[in-house]
Amino acid sequence: MLRVDGVTKTWKEFKIEKVSFEVKRGEYFIVLGPSGAGKTLLLELIAGIHFPDGGRILMDGRGVTHLPPEKRKLSYIPQEIALFPHMKVYDNIAYGLKTKKIPKEEIKTKVKEIAEILEISHLLHRKPKTLSGGEQQRVAIARALIVEPNLILLDEPFANLDVHVKSKLLREMRVWRKKFNFTALHVTHSFEEALSLGDRVGVMLNGKLVQTGEVKQVFMNPKNEKIARFLGFENIFEGCVRGDRFVVDGISMKITGKPKAKVGVRPDSIVVSTNIPDMDNVFRGRVIAFEDLGALVRLTVKVNNVEFKAFITHTSFLEMEIKEGQEVFIGFKSSSVYCFD
Image 1 (tube, rainbow, N blue to C red):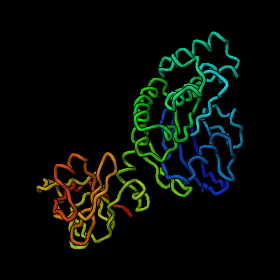
Image 2: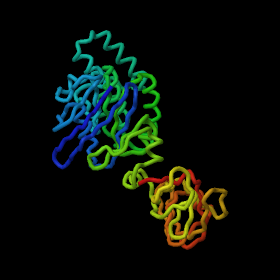
Image 3: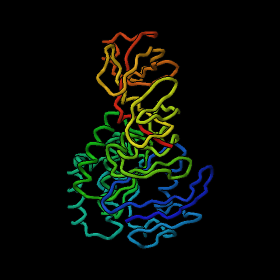
Image 4: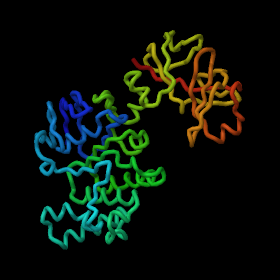
């Protein structure tokens, strides 16, 4: 449906280098990367706000590389929600249909239908400035969907919402997607958004799309250390392989898959206990640090000269009465040890 082929662009301090990927019809594709990676610039190139220095952009096999936005049959939801402040919610949603000269009664019917689905019927008479952030985002999504675009572009759509509103909108977005069966390209730095909404994901670092694939496959099998670190692998070790085991500083870990000299273990894959856990890899260590992350506590456990980062809940932290210097056991499955270059 969308094909980006070798697109390159330098704009201000941002640079995109030979980015290529495809989005299939009906797919929800996530571009995931840190701030400054070039995600928004990529979206603006696809939207037609900027034109690339090189490469091609195609939609349904038709070249749109240098077409203006209105010729691309897409909807764009920027990070800063751009509702018309002087218009009521009804007119904001109806705006795209009015520009297409759709009959008034048909517009009225369509606005009513989409407002009911997105649960904003009670807001149609209000101005954007009277709405909460979550309500404004619903209006922006309704305005994007009502014109039945071939593609919806979303730029960090939930970045400015509090955690409870964001969680609710993520759940509802999955419902709306099934209802409307739209194709989406969504850029974000949020792992939660990628895992919750994405069919496939492309990881973008320093202006390059460095890995693409199904969301779980990419998160669990990063191609290299740089990608792994971005995706939350805080435990990365370099050692040697002996049969089905990886050895580092006298610690021998059982692994699965193709052995390599560098492995990673996610902190959320490690079990911490005062008793010996029944797992493939079990080690006795000492807590040398802990950090309150809000919902979780990050422990640093030293085994020999190797430091492991692990996440535990506040409840577990209190039940085990964790203190610096305390001896604990850590355990993880062999399938939780990922090998990469």
